[in-house]
Structure formats: C-alpha cells, structure tokens
Image 1: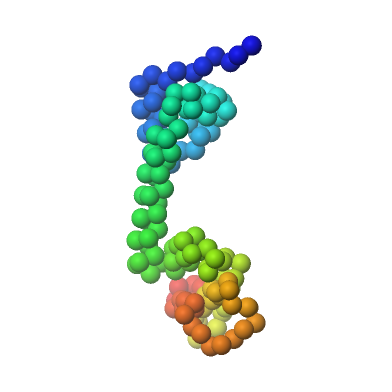
Image 2: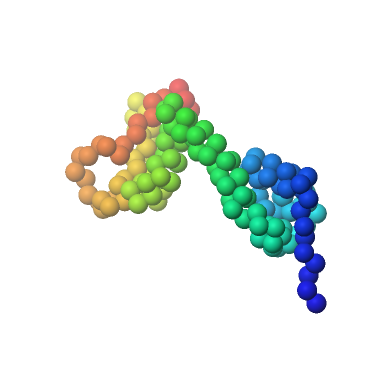
Length: 138
C-alpha cells in the first residue's frame, strides 16, 4: 500500500519557508507541520520544493556568516579562529590550535600551519595570535 502524498497549501509553504529562513532544522519544521522528518523530506521532493528550501536555508547561513565575519573584523579572536578554520580548512586545522599561558598575564593562541610539522620551529609568526589581558581579561 502506498503512502498518501502530502500536498502543501500556500500557508504551509509560507510557514515552512519562514522557519527555514530563520534557521530551523528539518525536525523542527516537521514538528510544527505535524509530520515526521521522513514525511517532510519526502513531501518537499514531491511538491517540487527542494531547490527553494535549499536556497532559503542559505539565507540563514549567509546571515550567520556575515555576523561571524563582522565579529572577526572587530578583533573577536574566537570568531577569527572559527572563520579561518572553516574557510581555509587545509591550512588552519583546529587540531593544530594550542593556547599557551605566558608570563606577564598574556595568553597566546598558536594556530600552526597544517602543512608545517609541529616540531618545526623556523620562527615564523604569521600564524600566531596574541591575546592581551590573559584569560581573565585583566
């Protein structure tokens, strides 16, 4: 026996698109529409909405990306690290991040180039980010 097809009306489509635009996940959208996640995914395909949903999800992603970028440009070190580790994954791997506590109440975050061996010390500082004020922000 075949499963009944879900046909979205205009109101359901608008609700669904609005939810995806603000970053809701499939499971959240499905719950609001009183569907299982599997039924929602199948209905999206059956209603020809796959491309529209993908584009709409991208709106939320771009908003977060721009917010992260603005925070990185303001000097937010965590945002800088996250941005670089995601945008230049091969060069800036999280596994190569170390936080060193130094004297004088200054923390230094070292993000090593993934292509350079960890024990290689050539004095290069292009991947060193200094954080003033120590871990307590003093």
